[in-house]
Amino acid sequence: MNYFLAKTEPSTYSIDRLRQEGKTTWDGVRNPQAVRAISEMRPGDRVCIYHSGGESSVLGLAEVATIPLPDPKDPKSMVVDFKYVAHLTPSTGLSDVKKSKLFDDWALVRQSRLSTMAVPQAFVDWMRERYPDTKI
Image 1 (cartoon, one colour):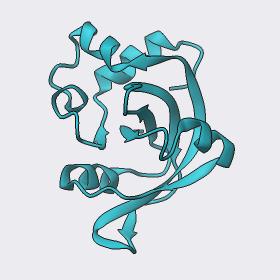
Image 2 (image 1 turned 180 degrees about the vertical axis):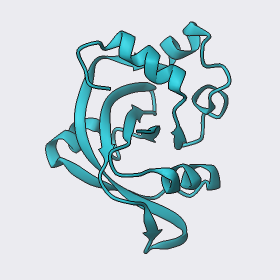
Image 3 (image 1 turned 45 degrees about the horizontal axis):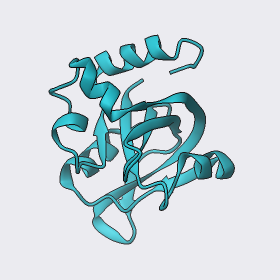
Image 4 (image 1 turned 90 degrees about the horizontal axis):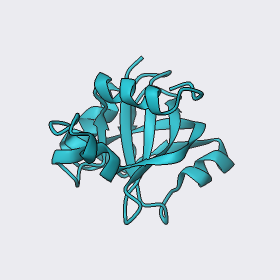
């Protein structure tokens, strides 16, 4: 299983909405690095859902439900379906990630505008310690 992070503005699409709907198509990604990350996703992979726009926190988890496909609205992009897994309480803020000094090389810290990215195994392990009762 691989891990990814997907950023969203909560006013556009929130983790609460994903929980309510159960499943969504992740689309609208245009950055080539982010599109590459989507193209690497496989069913069963986990996705940390990150709210940007002031919250700057990982608030929950989703699971990749489909193989990535070309975006019918944009041939340079890809889409994939996510299904809701869990909320993370309390959320993990970007400030917590930065304070740890463990992930200074990760795109979340270095490339604040990148919307979708792979998650390093060290972050997965760190999150498992923070949320021992959640199946990360």
